Image 1 (cartoon, rainbow, N blue to C red):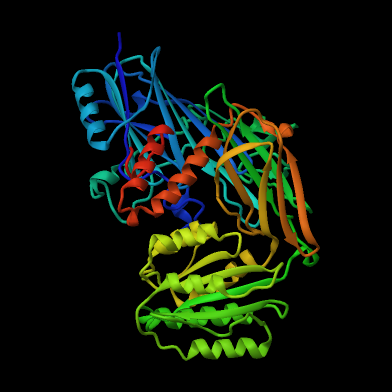
Image 2: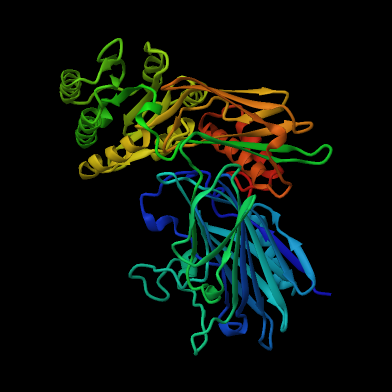
Length: 600
C-alpha cells in the first residue's frame, strides 16, 4: 500500500499578518499567480507530470473570501518523480488548510516547525514514501515539494485560504489565479538566482502545438454579501452571473480556454443609503459559533448626509525629523491644511520631548487660521527627544463639539519611543476619534506606522519623497473627507455575543466600511442595534438576528476573527514582558490552524 506523508511548514510569519488590508507601494508586489508542478530535472522531465485540470471555487461572505484551489496531475512517465508545486497567492491571504491525494489515499497537512517538517520530509523521501512539504518563500509565494510520485499516480493538491477584500473607491476585487509563466528575476540569468529563489525560473506548458489548452480550467464564485450587490463584472473574462438570493458567477461557454490569465471579479455593495448585513456561522452543541456584521456607506454620499468634520494634526518635530523628513512634512501639512473646507475645524499639535498646540480649542478653517498654522510649522527646525504617547493623550483630551467627526492625523518618521499603551490607547478610544498615520522619510519605521494604522482601523500613508507628498495628501483627503456616521455604538439585545472585535468602533467613512465580528452562544435570536450621528441627527438601525444569513459553509468567519485577534496581539509582542501575548498567539494559531510568528 502506498504511504503518504504531508507536512506543512513556513519560512516566514503567517501571510498577511503584517500587511493585512495594506495597499502595497509596488503594484506588482501583490500580484497573484498560479499553481503548477515542476519535475526535478535530474529525475524526470516536465512533460511527465502535466497539469490535467485546475478548478477554483470562491465563497464571498460580505467582504471575506474563502478560496479553494484544486490542481490535478498524473505521472505519465516510466519512473518515480520528485516535483515542486508553486502556489503564488495574495499577501492578504491566510492559508489554513492543504491536502494531497495520491491514488486513493488523502492526507491532510500537519503543522510543525520548519526544522521538524524538513527532517520528517527527508526521512519519508529516503524511505520511499510519497511525501509532501509546503514552505513559504515569500508572503505571497508557497512552494510544495512532492517526493516519490509513482508511474501512473494521479496527484490532486488542494489549498484553502481566506482573504479580506479591501475596497477601492467602493469597488471590491477578487483575483483567482490561473496558469502563468516563470517570474521575472531582473537581470539574473539561469543559475544566478539565490537558492531559495530557484522557483523563479521554473518552466511551464499551457497549450499544445495547435494552440489548444492541455488542461481543463474552471472557476465558480458565490457572493453572499448580506446586502444588495451592484456593478458585478469581470474585466478579464466573459462571465455567466446568476441571482437567486445570492449571486453565483461562472465562466461563459466561450471561456473554455481562458486559463491563460488571472480571473478578476469586481463588485460593489453600496447603494444610496447606509447598508447593513449580518452573517452567521452556526455550530453543533459545544462548537464555537461566529458572526460578522458589515456596515457599508452610501455609494455617493450627499453633502447633507455628512456630519461636520474636525481634524487634529499631531506633527513630529523631534531631532530625528531634522532635514529632509521635516521639510517633506511641511510640504505635506501645507497641502492638507490648504485643502480644508471653510466648514471644517482643525488644530495642530507639535511634539518632540514635550508638546504644544496651536489653540486650546479647534479653529475654523479660514484662510487666516490656515496661514497661521502654516507659519507655525514652517518655523520648526527639528530637535529634542520624541514622546508620542503624551502627545496622543493631549490630542484626545482637547475639547470637541458634539456631533462632529474628529480625526487625529499623526505625521512622523516613526522613530519614537512608543509603548504598548499607545496601541491600546487608540483601540480603546476609537469611539472618540479616528486615527490615521502618515510616515515621512526615506526610511520610515513601517512597523510603527502600520501598527498605528491597524490600531486605528485605517490605512497607513507613507511619503518617501517631497515629489509624492501632494499626491499622497490628495489620496488621504479623499479617504477621510466623507464621514457618513460618527459616534457609533453597537448593543446586543437578546443575542449572546462575546469576544467581539473591535472593542470600539471608528466612524463610518465613504471609503471605509465598518466590520464587526465575534462569537455567540446559544440560538441565533434577538437584535443587534446600531446607533450613531449623521448630519440629520441621531441614527438608529436594528437588525433581527433570526433573519441573518446562516450557513455552515461560512467557515471564513472564524478565521477572520482569529486573524484579527492574532494581528492585534502581534503588535504587542515587543512589549510582552510576561509572555502572555506570545502564549495567546501560539494557542490561537494551533487552535485555528493558522501560521503565526510561533506556529508554522
